[in-house]
Length: 464
Image (tube, rainbow, N blue to C red; front, side, top):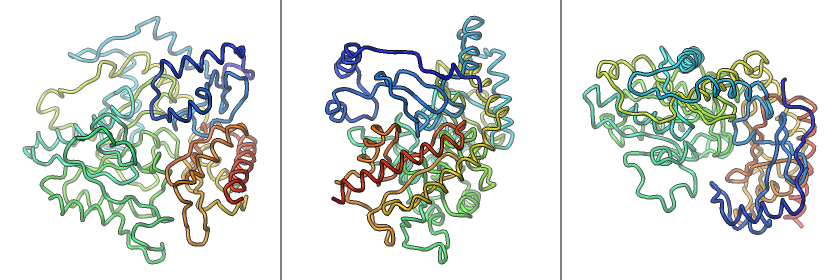
């Protein structure tokens, strides 16, 4: 692994740190962050450097980043190869548009590369600047497909509860998590949601022994309710991400695909988090052997070294667009040359270092070691590859949650910060564990030990 080096190098004085925190509170509006928390801390937690799976704060303390940024830093921090690729391309061609029939060598190369990787038949690739743009693009393409096929009223999109698909207006209308709609209504019309599949907290009160995949049947019921003639597509994260790293039961996506085919509904897979190795396969949907019609990508396509996203559409979805002659949609930075250069090098690293295979092995090991802890408030330890969550519960036998007012997962994440982990609390007291794909067994041992200390400290605190 060609990282910047083993040691962190930047140092800041107490005066500099204090001023940075004051300036942050005065000038910077943070995305999805508690202003009250930051004020209580005396300013934000400021990260200065990263190397491998670890980052360093301005105070000089090292942390294991259990979230790989926001589920994205697949190849680890400090990869000089990616910096070199960006520098070389900036000097050669920093930017050129892909509108109006223009192209450049690297966008062609990357489109060919991603097309060969994507789990879509005869994939055509459209590039974006990130996940929200990829989601908006996918929903527009689904509606365009039916419009160009003479069915303009077939424009409704069905998603799921606990889904996160981004925050631009189309994406946030597909998202269904607490708080993301407050103050932003009216949303884009014709978005609907069905209950998400989660066996540990089954919405239908079923056990796996008597389950008939009612969670998948809910899609058919919603299509019939809305009207087959109105439903353009069904969208889902193969593994639900921000909603809790939730893995559906066996057979779920096979049944979803059957329902979509039965009612002429496009299956739209949001691989923004799952894609490029995060689940232990190149794409998450490959665990179920199902082929979507449209796939959204971002995050792992560059490991977050530069903003980029993509959408893959099948040959069937492309056909009416080709016949029409033009797609009236695009972003200034679609196919940005520097992003393409970084993406190509990033994907080369993922393949050459066998990071998908490492992810499958390390993910199994991580979940097993956490389950072995035997801490009484650890309920379900779930996930695929290195896309995982630890479910904290009050009662193991009955899967009873702590009262929301306790904020147990948030309490544990604050203690984890003191113990050298960056640990993100998810809704309903889940803890996100999605480190970089370069993680090793010794790293996992350290992570699990610090996680155990943090959970035990939090549990003692709330239980008295």
